[in-house]
Length: 160
Figure (cartoon, rainbow, N blue to C red):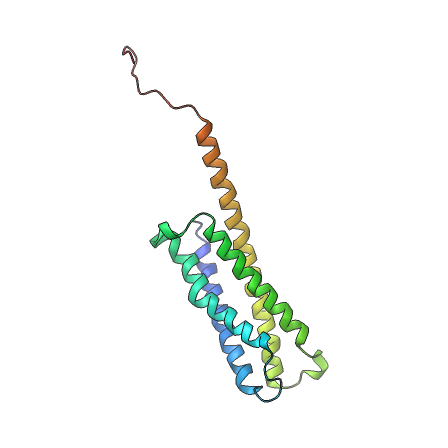
């Protein structure tokens, strides 16, 4: 495992926690007006999914539970989480009013949520690339080892 992955996982957890806090604030303050589009609830789900399931699995399974970290499960979890964040921040960005109309605290919280979610998506896209590279390398190494002839255990002077 690469040494930089664990600090990135920690940053992903912090951004997920920030998303949970921001969306909770938006839900509490805009409950009657914007009555919170389902996108806000979706972003709350993304933060909870990332903090409670994705980051713990991606960070701990390869070390403590290697049996549950199948070579395709890690990239699949990375890809699903990346797709959740991408769809979330794009959907939220499509709903927000233009900046000249965004002059109240809840709207600024929505803007901050979009930025945090876009950075979270970029972090998962970055780690996803390395997960797929790791799968490609492991398959290539396995294929290379299968093609090499077995080394004979007979020492010189003995007959087989």
